[in-house]
Length: 332
Ligand code: ALL
Image 1 (cartoon, rainbow, N blue to C red):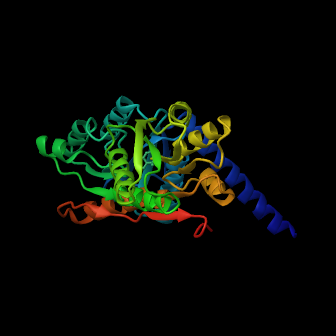
Image 2: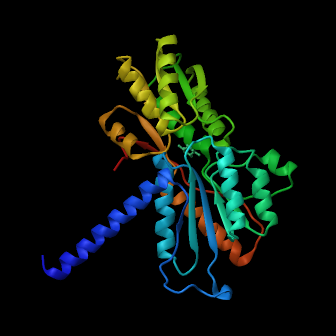
Image 3: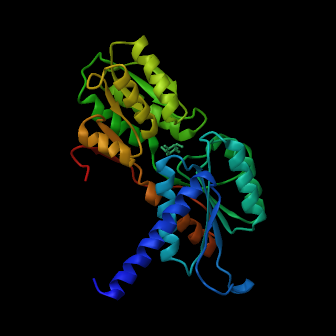
């Protein structure tokens, strides 16, 4: 390798390391601003819009992937906007997300793209943002339409049809079971609309195949909780043939519970998200299927829509984004 190429790879390596560090740091100190690299601050009139991305737990690979996707998009579009990426530490820390929205209002961002931890309780603070002239785009987990209506707010949802995604996963599972078999569902946070929709989608698939849902319990999207819930379910219902998990983190907890109960291979696990740990398990046969809702693109779709809204101030409408079934057969 000549000296120039060596210097170049060293630079790429250091940059990579730096970015990796920024990512790690982000998980423990979630607030972070991803700004452009221009040495001089633009004047007020030419200033690019600041877009805030507010996510949920950055301890979940799903949101790290989402953040990386958003950052890559901002880098490619550095002339169009600056990005403030924020997350929380605990899946259910709704009040921290509320504070983040307040902070973004105070920082006078032009748009907020939010994946709410709860579908109802973040609407008021988002309304406050809208009243302050900020464009708010809801991604990933849809706000409750009843509460939006009650509060007289319109917030467009850019995200997948979670019921459809869960149905795809449930159908793939049903093909491996027979009518009358019994299964259990591990639900996400019960106040999150996407958790409810995934439960519905799993139920649709099981009903269509005449499979009995013996139990359905929340493990709040968390691996540890899923591990406990799954262990208890395996003991209480020794005839269970499958565990349908509303996200991959919970599927990981269920896989560990199976192992601890010496039941690997006897109970089928399915998940939702297509995180790397699950891809590995799908390849090895420990997990049958998951749904890919394209975490790397989810925030990007929301950001692009926010930019569009900022440019032409049209009336906001929901946009459906893709969700695909992932099994061993189509896993790259
Ligand atoms: C949902 C996402 C993911 C994720 C979960 C945990 O909103 O769609 O499935 O695993 O949040 O926060």
